[in-house]
Length: 379
Image (cartoon, rainbow, N blue to C red; front, side, top):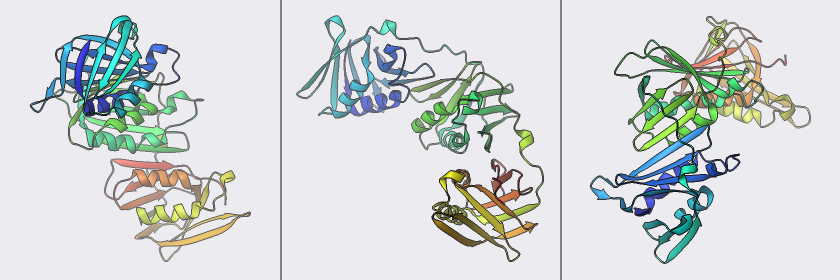
């Protein structure tokens, strides 16, 4: 194998596939990046057996040559060293050549590295996916949907199914739901497909979605999504992202979402976020960073927190309006700030059904997003 390649394209490709390479793998070859050179271009692959990413660098794009293939072939190189080397090479062009006994020469300008390669035949095959259930979403929408739900997955392995985001397809809509049993995040969107998609209900690991989100561009380019029983594949231009699905049934969360409320408060989300951020400065870590929230007849909302060892803070903010009963409630400042950051739009409605019942937050005039939080008993 021997080829010349533009350094920028190689660095970007390596960065993308590195997101799937784990340093703590039990399969030694998976600590490497597989490189395959063909007449069409160079393919890089990284995998940790849960996530696999394949990046393709074509021979030319937009009329300019990116890769010059001198000899086809394949090799696996240690990812950690290879990624550091290509990033620090001196010139814009890199030459990679496999020599005798799987020795690999990497040259750029007057710099020349020699790495020990591994036979690529030992590298596991990527999943073969039949493309029956295919639909697409714009990359920026997919990125937003991940950002607005993935933060609420559980970090505890006691219920592994809750470490993923539940994706449900029904009636031409995609519903994304995540919960760690103390809070819930929900986002839905219309999906585009050339044919009707049968209903599906899968759980994608939160870790996979976090890594995917780092790769997605803020563009309207469409990402094709292919779902099978055990895998999901996201197809972008010159990039394939595979993730395994979590086994098991996701709990039915529809009954957690209240259908009526006793108190509705309309607020500016940034004002509330900043007030809670300030109040949380004094919230005691031992009490899970709890702040108190009280409403008054004149439409003000009081955010407070006190810690006997440190002190207390009280801040009032003016609501747009309050409908229903007066209210006193306590909640985790972190959960509330996470939820407010995930909501787009400045005007929000918070609906309460009682002091110890879950409350939910939505943007005004937008039912595609919902954040639900369980209060904490302090009063």
